[in-house]
Structure formats: C-alpha cells, structure tokens
Image (cartoon, rainbow, N blue to C red; front, top):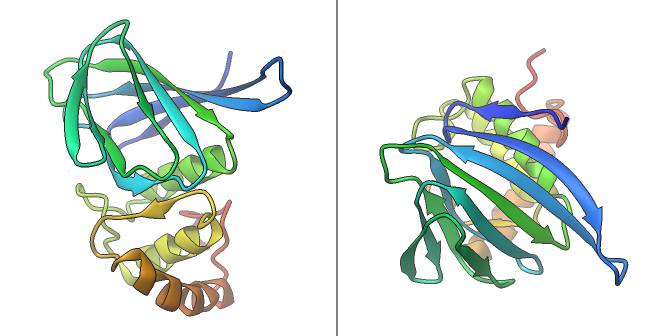
Length: 186
C-alpha cells in the first residue's frame, strides 16, 4: 500500500502511484483526502494536464477564472497552462484522485510542500512564516519552475519571479537549502 503523507496546513493527505499508459506515457495518480477548509492555492502547470476525479464529497475547483463544484463520479480537467486551485468548502472530507500527465516533478514538489508545512514554516494561508521558510519556498519555486508557476502572495507576478527568484534561490542554496530536503532543519 502506498505511503500516505499529511499536510497540516493545506489540510490534506496524499498518496502517490504511477502507471504507464498503452502509448508508453507515464501518469502520476495523487490520491487525496481534503479536510473541510483544506485545498491548494492558485498555480499553473505549463505542460501538465490534471484530471481530478472526485470519489466522495464535493470539492470546489478554480479553472481559469471560474469556480465549479464537482461531486462523486464527476471529473474536472485542467489543461496545461490553466490557472487552477481547489478547496473543500463543505463540512465533510473530500476524497479524490488527481491524474497528472506528464507527471514531471509533481510528486517531489508536493513532498517538499508537505515537509515545509510540517516543519511549521507555513502560515494557515500557506505563506512562509520565517525568513528561512521564505528562502525554502524560493528554492522550491526555482527548482520546480518548469513544472509549476506559483501565483499566490507574497510572490510577485511570474515575469518578476523569473528575475528575482534565481538569485534568492542561490542564496538559499548557499545556506544549505535544497529541493528534496525542504523543511529539514539542521
């Protein structure tokens, strides 16, 4: 059985499996249980499609500029390059599976996010609480830049991020912060 990791800030639990389709393409399946009030902030995957298949509960999804709700048996497809987020606005747990294709480094990014959350580095709004947590977030933004563009405050617009994130990520690296080890304390 796949390991389940818990994110106390985003209020969700995740497990990961991978499969290969008939055409040889790989798919990452992220089984997710979202507690009431949980979810993720707006972001974009430049080349990844995500298909959110709701198994239990009702989840609200942002796709582009519109929020839609989906319940059991419904699927929300987010094409590459589309701004999106999800939230559990209900009073009961949401259980869903995200099918990500191509998977790129999504699993590693989510694992780093969980470690940062569990280390106490994120506020309830998923904003870094300390200078070190901010540097960790910037190292993540840089390391996973080909897979995801983060769109929530305190980060500036993507064009400005491309200018300021690399030097700040290098500063984080000089201080021993590395993707894959986010949230680990010396």
